[in-house]
Every structure is written in structure tokens, then in C-alpha cells.
Image 1 (spheres, rainbow, N blue to C red):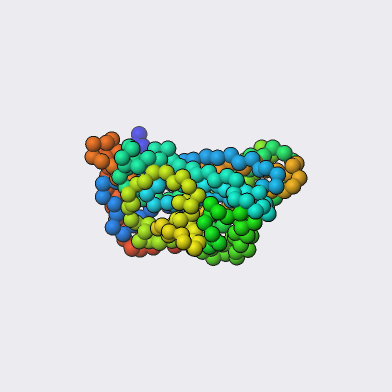
Image 2: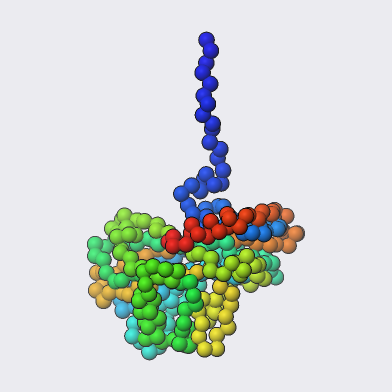
Length: 299
């Protein structure tokens, strides 16, 4: 008895299929964002850093995620006492461990960030919600009155207030968020936020890999400007979270942030990544433009 042959074609599994539903600039998507000329002899790497922040009464916070050329540092956070005349109490930078060293200490010779973003989760278990949380997508450099290491709590409050006052649409925008968007009382949600390309030339350039950015002023040279600052390249937009802490201890929130990034790196040929390097082909201008256009405005 003859059997019927199905005309249905089997779907091929590919990287693009595995990443279905994710934008090309989502750091969890393995596909490299397209560029016109491609990349020769590069080793693709991904990294994650995680921090859990427990709110403290009468303290304000700013968390930042940015692509720093030639560095494995992918984020930081600052804590200061509200309305105080002393400098910020805490500056902590988050760095991908495998990319924390420069070339002479075992790291790559050069690198560039291809995508970066973070995921936010409200991990608090109390039954009360309090404090205002805002997400900002910054297309320009922040303007600061003086070097970040010298800024007082009052000055940081003013910067946070300026960010909260930005429009809710456009390349530079601030969106007030509700705690329920991140889950609460055990209902967790990894809400993703991703950066966009702000300088196509700098985005495609490789920089000598310096490893870790440890000081607050060195970090902000990439994302801000102030009198006497040294402006470092800024290839992608900056993601900023600001939130004020309620005075009521019952309404303090616990937040978990996961920083995600992907890199293209170049290594000496006597290393395993150097031997494993491959070429990333260039793409047509139409495909490059489409990938950028599709991503603009996506959080």
C-alpha cells in the first residue's frame, strides 16, 4: 500500500530561530548585530554581572548600564544620602570577570561592545509598595556641575530630578515604572531594558582593552560631561535607573539587577580565543538600517 508523502518542509533550527522573539540588540540573543564591513578574526564573548540592592531608609540610588570602549565594566550604582552636603557614600562598578584584565594581565588585546542591557526584578516579600522608580534611556551625555567624586547628595538629587523630568518619548526619555511591572510578593519578573547605537563610527571601532574601570570619574568620562572632564568615546546609549526611598521602613523594596553584554574581542594567536577566532561577515546597508530602525524605541 502506497504511503502519502508530506509536502511540509521541516523547519531548520538556527541561531535566528533559537532567538525568535528577541531583538538583535537583546544581549540574550546570540546573533551579532550587523555592520557594513564586518569583523575579521574576532572571538565572540558574553558576560553577566548581578547585584541585589536592598533599599535603606533616607538613601537615594542611581544605577547605570553603559558600553565602555575597551573595558569589561558594564554597569555601576551610586548611593547617597538625600539632601546631604557630603559626597556619595557608595560607588560600585560591575565587570565581566573574563574581561576584567588588560592584555598584559591575560585579557584580550582589543575589544568592542556589540550589545548591552539589564534585567530588573523586584524581589521584595513585603506587602507594601513605596518609592518612585524611573527608567531613563539617555542618547546624550549627562551634564554634571563638577566631577562625580566631588558631587554632594544635594547635587546628585538635582541630577536625578532632571532625569525624572525628561519627556516620556523620544531618543532621550524617562518612563516612571510601577512596582507591579517587576512582580511583587513572590511574583518575579525579569523585565529587560537594552541600549541602542548612538554613534555608528565609534560602535564599529575596536579599542585597546584596558580591563576594569574602577573609579567613579573614569566611569563617568564615558557617559557625562563637566568642567574639566575628559570625554571618552560613547558608542551606545546609557540606561539609568533612579529611585527615591520612602521614609516608611515597611515600604522599602529589594531589587535585583542583571547586567548582560556581548563583546567581539581580539586575542594573541598563542591563546585559545585567538586560535578560535572567526570572521563576522559584513551586511548590506539595508539590513544594517533595518536592525537599527527596528530597535529604536524598544526598551
